[in-house]
Image (cartoon, rainbow, N blue to C red; front, side):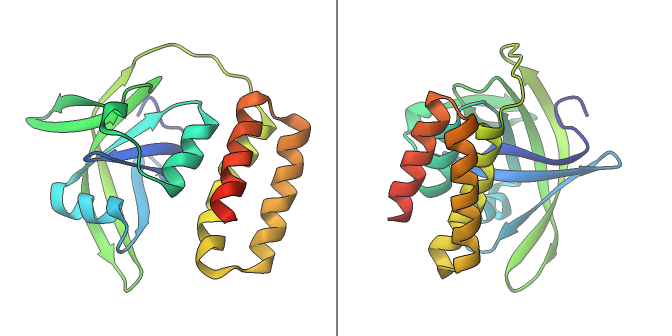
Length: 184
């Protein structure tokens, strides 16, 4: 697989006209993901059987899609394997997968992914930015924190906020400000 690398790849996944940050697990040539039952992403995958992984370097969009819906104008329709799939209009690259539920628990679905098509829209070299990486971590913790108000998650959010303030640029700082508004 070309676009995904070994480990967990943080992407913005699209299913229908829905977008959400997702971690795609890629190990030993196999791609999968775990989704909470009841999420729009899980419902759409069960219904439609596909997902698009969008590679994009926009920390504000990661935060927005973690907590809110984005407009239909943010999507581009792509024909893949006889199906109409939607990807993000601003994606630097994207990979379309068929998705099949491999296992179901009371809380989650384990979904196996099979690559159908991947495209690099724009070559974009991006150095590692600890501020951007901390935004991803903050978004993960913040979605859980909103549900249970666990003080340990708040400590992690605050820790990563310090990294964003120290290492982030204008976009990372804007993303952090937006994330804090969603938590208020």
